[in-house]
Image 1 (tube, rainbow over the protein chains, first blue to last red):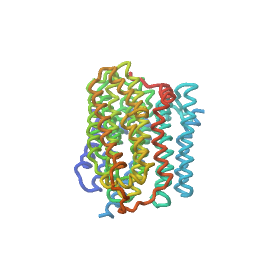
Image 2: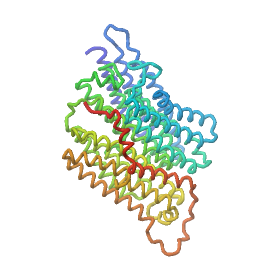
Image 3: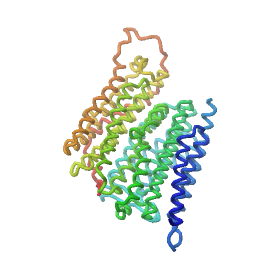
Image 4: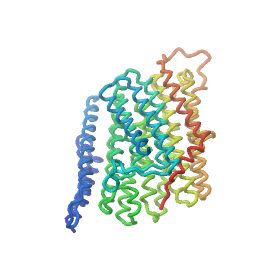
Length: 90
Length: 484
């Protein structure tokens, strides 16, 4: 197993862990964290693909991950705001 | 010119959104201008297509693999037209619906952002760009669902948000795997370089799953009825008519450009089977619904099933084109008809203060224009001539009969009958006896005339689509995607 494969496998493992937290946990904060862990797993798989054998790293996956992080931050902020709004209704 | 027209479709609603955020004045006016410009851009692109065929644009001169490429063919332009044509009456309606209410101040910029995301989704031809547009579409859609601020709406919005994010992440995981293997994101390039391999199947499976969740194909529809049913009426119309079609559009593009011809038959049969399940299950739930908006929302679940029936039919050689025509026409006609039904339902709900079907009869009789709009939309949903829904179902049926897919024929006919079941349930409200004297009971809240006529306008478009099908079919056939 190469280093790249290892990173990719860890990424997939994070994805599955985040997904199971999202499904199994009941509290909003835990589920939002689960979503973020899922996203981190995907980003890890993406970054892995930048690694070329002996060549300079491919910049495109980095650009994608940066965009992905921006999306994830906005989605998280929104999810937290929504969770607070629901809290107020209780 | 192509660049100008297509940029107009994205820039107009985006500028409008920014303007509406910083200066909430003449809100409906600015939004109406932006939607009109989207429509103008789409018509401009249609004329370019007629003159010089399908177009590829590298934005800013940066083409694939580094930049973002747009692709404009008959399918793109038909979808853009759908967004503009459904968007116009909805905008008009929302003006009357929200009036000066606080919820309206948030509605306008969010609706414009949603339209921006949708238009750039239809124009894109790049796996990662689709991820970004899907997220923009999803986030603005969820924000729109929360507008009423009621608990049911917030709960539905949260489920919608989580499900949508999971769908996007599955899709993005598939994109990551594809980039790992091929180092390309542009669909036109990928089409040339992909070869059937295990990695490609896994990637496609992940992407398809994510997109099916987002387009609410049975049994992944669980988030849809509550979200569409508890949103304000103009938002329900936008969600059911346009947003679910966004994810399905990407699925369709992948189907043609990325799925290898060696796809086992079982996969398309399963997709078709899920579609059949959606038609039956969604229709039965609509027949059992106790609230008018839930009825219309479950009808959306059922109608989305027809979209999935396309996959087994598209594999049938010469009938594939007929199936694709039927499918795209179906998306368009369903957008208009379902939009009109949600708008009309919103009028009834606004007037009565609730949407419980059992006690809605006096309201229905007091709002003949809205009921008429609902009826015309219903005619298209049932697939009766001369509506757009008829042309769509006729093409799909033709493809099914021609290719000998009798089971799909049976499902489509059963679906038509079941939809008549729930639509007549609503229409019967107009004719039920409530005694000779008008009941003194419920005080009706007045409904804006513009909202009533907007629902009728959208319903009439669904009807016109059937009477005037040829120009649309011509447009659609330009650069018709083919599998392989």
